[in-house]
Image (tube, rainbow, N blue to C red; front, side, top):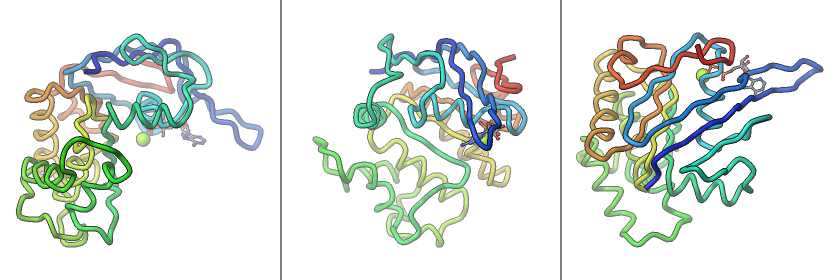
Length: 222
Ligand code: ADP
Ligand code: MG
C-alpha cells in the first residue's frame, strides 16, 4: 500500500522557439495516503503539469520525486508504467473514453496487457455497478450523459485498485448536479477505500469540501 508521494525542489521548464516557460518552480509537496487534496490556481499556473509529475507521466527538469520514500525520478519508462499500474488512476476533464468501445470494454482497457489474479471482465462489471452504472455495461460513450461518461472514466481509473486517483478538472465539463455526483463518488472512494485523491479544480466551492487545498500561482505554491 502506497502511503506517501513527495516532491522535493521540483521544477519543470518547457523549451520552445528559444523561449523557456518555467511551468513549476521549486515545488516541495508531500501527499499522504487517504487524504483528499485539491489543487487550485488560475489557468496556466501549473496545475496540470504538477499532476503529470506527481503521476510520473512526465519528468521534472530539476528536483526529486519519491514514492514511499523511494526515489523514482529517474526510473525508465517501463518501471514507471509498472508503478502507475500498481498505484495510480487518472481522470481528465475530457473523459478520454474510446468511442467505439462499450462502457465495460473501456473499463477493461487498463487490464488488457496485464497479468492479474482476478477475472478482468467480472472486475470491470463490479466496478461499474459500484459507480452506479450497472445498467449501462454495454452502452457506448455516445449513449451516455457527460456525468455518466465521467463515472465510466472513474471506473476505468480504479479498476486496477490504485492507491491514488489523480483528477485533472474532472467536473470541469459537467453541470453542477453531475459535477456533485462525480465529486461525491471521489469522496466515497477516499473515505471507504482510503484512496488518496489529488483533485485539480477551478471550483472553490468543491475545493472547500476537501481535506487540504494547495494553491498554485505562476508555478509556485502560495
Ligand atoms: P494549468 O493546468 O494550471 O492551466 P499548465 O500546467 O497546463 O497550467 O501550464 C503551466 C505553464 O506551462 C503554462 O504557461 C503552459 O503554457 C506551459 N506548458 C504546459 N505544458 C506545456 C508543453 N507541453 N509545452 C510548452 N509549454 C507548456
Ligand atoms: Mg490544466
